[in-house]
Amino acid sequence: MTSASSGRHASSGHFSSAEGSASSGHFSSAEGSASSVSNRPMSNPASFRSMWADLNDVGRSPATGGYRRFAFTPEDEQLREWFGQQAAARGLDLTVDRAGNLWAWWGDPDTAGPGVVTGSHLDSVPEGGAFDGPLGVVSAFAALDLLQVQGFTPSRPIGVVCFGDEEGARFGVACSGSRVLTGALDPDRARGLTDQDGMSYADAMAWAGRTPHLLAADPQALARVGTFLEVHVEQGRSLVDLAAPVGVASEIWPHGRYRFTFTGRADHAGTTLMSDRADPMLTYAMTVLAANKQARMLDARATFGRLTVQPNGTNAVPSQVTAWLDARAENPAILDALLTDLRRQATERSERDGTTLDVRVESWSDLVRFDVTLRGKLVAVLGNAPVLPTAAGHDAGVLSAAGIPTAMLFVRNPTGISHSPEEFAELGDCAAGVRALADVLRELTT
Ligand SMILES: [Zn+2]
Picture 1: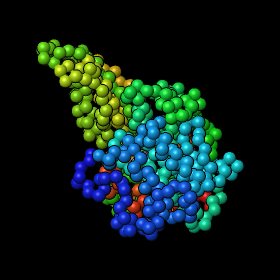
Picture 2: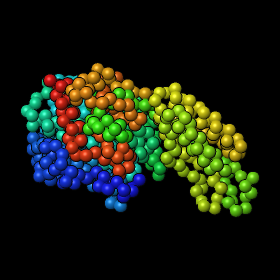
Picture 3: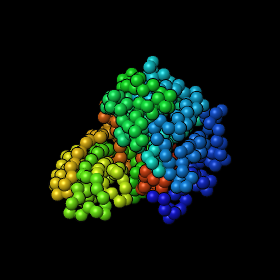
Picture 4: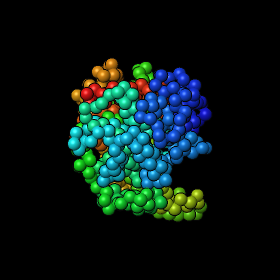
């Protein structure tokens, strides 16, 4: 998705000076030009622009403008190091939990907690945009800076968190950092996950200098979190339609990832009669169409976005096609109905094709309803901000499912597109998000 038609928004999520000067006074272009992360005064209100500049080139493809920031890679290490530098520059206490997530604390959550935590993730999908994840982390630090400038002293500790491997782009399981933390993902299962090159999660951790055998749920770290707030770029156009820069999330749709393995028989593409084939690609192709139709009929979402083919030769009938389905719906019953019908259709088709089908659930995230009291507080503080559901999963959903009062703030995305270089937010809207977050943090820690 790298069309030139989206103009200035398509390139990199980089704020031009023209956009900067048109925005709110909080991020003036002069103050935003500093790029050093060290020695930055805590009271610098231009911190958002400066942090954004720090992150702009990390894992970015010069050819497409898309980002590739996978877990336990040099890019991931660089981003984690940057997070540590931001914590140090503000005099925050940096801790790493047993699931590998990073926490920067203003105040001591063990003596004065639990605290109010905000943040997001810094990893990306393949060819991802600049905002999904980093907006929440950068906004968190910027909100703390704003509170500092205002001379505010919180009555409870405030934490900034960077969750690891939120997108699951490398190992196929989303939110592995927050899920291991809360106990929703068994550490043994996490360690055994493999990437497309066959490298295990445990080996990748070791590569990055971590200690895979220590990977575990961390109830102590979780107990420090009294409330969690995540700022995120909107992954849709609701706020554009509502002409609102910031909105509040109501719920996250349930979401499953399923591995479909279609097995047939490898054969010669020239000499094998069409009637003599057991071609799993055919079964797969029908299944893709059926998933699309089912999702449309149920007002749900179904996407086959990844597949591998064996032996993957132009002149060979495939022996096996493995394809991953991402499916989401308003509630679990609808999602269940979609999967049940899809399996039935795919199985019927495989019988006709002479192939076999195996379906495994790789991950499941239940419907998340964010804390209603907290949501009400947010809406009030933000002056009647709109409330909207989302079909995208987030660490906020994992924490909410673990029983922590959680809320999300969305920042308007004029393209409505995400997981693509075209994902965007105007600097002025980002500033509105930071102010909203600072206002809410103040309200919750006064
Ligand atoms: Zn995200």
